[in-house]
Image 1 (spheres, rainbow, N blue to C red):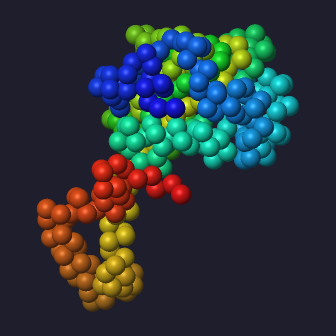
Image 2: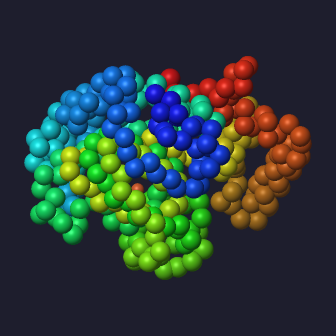
Image 3: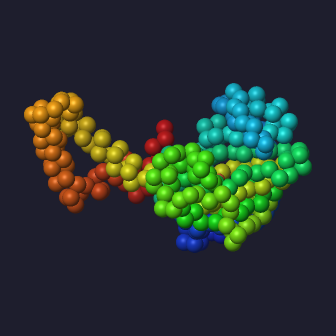
Length: 316
Ligand SMILES: [Fe+2]
């Protein structure tokens, strides 16, 4: 599976030009295009076949707010059949074809494979009428860049730009109930809204359809019928993580930086001496960071490239 297939009827080139990484887009659906995918990745033939091979914790979710985890896919099967939505995180760990797809697609998007993962959502939808007003996911905005491929079922999406926080690093919910309190500090605008704006866009995606939901867009989903969806999701790295990881690697090679920071909790002369020592190290570092080679060297240490310029996956 490659990017052309995932974003069809657009070509990979058109998708990268017009959508990646910040502009939402959708393709309503074409079940015919799924045949070669299921042939290549037979575990995706049904929710049952995916659950059967999934060897880690599965979250079981109900629209009324019920949430629990069970040990693995086999243990989740009765819950799936009893109308719970099942979430299989990082399914590429158990479905090799998805890992191959990640390696291919991430390379085409110029990112290392290690920043992508595949989540599978499965629900029978047989009991949807019992939750008519609550089915699907409430308004939220994700840190992930998400290519959501719907294999079966019908999903109605609504979306609008999140102007309350730029470049969020975790999921942002509506209102005051936030996953990360730090997002109150980094927000541009507060309070967070409690409802989708009236001019939100919407689309209905059916079997074989795809929704591209970039980082930082409010969205809601409503699922109908037997839904099986594979999300190719990318999260990070940020320039913060690139810098801190690469610098840490580099400084670890330097005995002076490995020294214990004696005196930092002292008062008087010992504390001043600690500040002076740290200041000297920072001065040397500032000289290196201003140099021409720093960006290239630091980036190479966290995102190595092969001789032909292809990013190497850091996943073993
Ligand atoms: Fe989402």
